[in-house]
Length: 227
Image (spheres, one colour):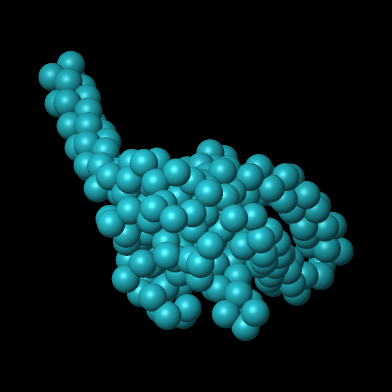
């Protein structure tokens, strides 16, 4: 439970960094994955998940009012579950554990991605209610109470972190009760496919990144010719 508390707090801070606080890049999966893994005793698994998420999400950047699914939340949930409930958990159906050893990482990562989408929707709802601080700040400024500005900023930041903490606690606890049981009964051939997918996903991520790079470059050259 202590590890879960620490992971949830860290995950909430990482998530808040993506748009609300700091934006010093600690929310990137390649950073938060290994950190979460280190906290719970398996930095290698955290690095693998962080690497996969970084390549998958490499072209996804929050800009303005556009909020993509939260990659740090996905990374935090997937890393915790993959470390605490590894592929050789007791109770697997005989013959269901393939030799690859990466299938549980892909399984928990795929299960965590919808949670990133859910957190995005919660974040959008939170931002609507966060406008309360803007309204209240305008009132206080008109009254000459400028000290409320700092209070509003810190309170808003605290709510961002608190929201992430509660979300991660609830989701990880629920997933810990449900997902390991589902994983146990997955047929071995599907697990083999998941193990193969572990090696395919980086290629897909790199392909997406290269496509985006060359598309932007060709568009820039085209615009220069038009000028």
